[in-house]
Image (cartoon, rainbow, N blue to C red; front, side):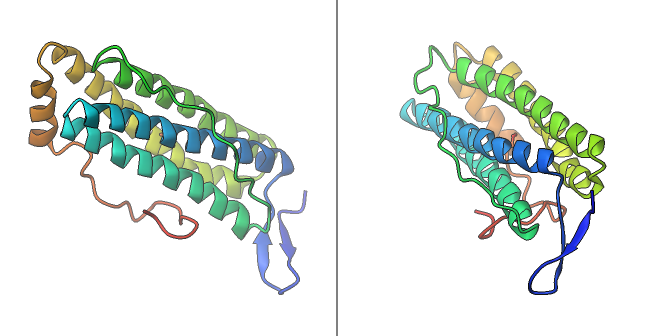
Length: 191
Ligand code: FEO
């Protein structure tokens, strides 16, 4: 298909492949759902008076929200219609301090598969601009799976003494990576 078209305002917009647009709209829902799940996890740790674990997941929730809004922005910039979706209900109760991180790691692995699938659709459709757009998310997923996997090791070791996990997070400044200048733009600006 034609990868470039002139819009009414005479600006040139990249036209993503329809199959990619449809699947990216689905992904927006998964990213918002991930954000909601992380808020639920953060609130759980907050209510258990584990502020470092809570802060880690409050920050992760914002990251996931920003991922969704990067996808929204990408579609808007391409003159496509983003769909702001209903969001699946998150898990709100957990048996111990380990379970939320185990759920988070599974979620990140699932999202990694989804992002790979999106990159694959873009490539199959010869939509190389969209394939390139997904590259940042692939890199991000490698980091998120790795950090969540590390955190799972830490909380498992700290299951009987959660303050060990709190001390680890404080000592290692986990979650304080700062902003990434290579990140795609966020609709409305990053929060
Ligand atoms: Fe945006 Fe880590 O999934």
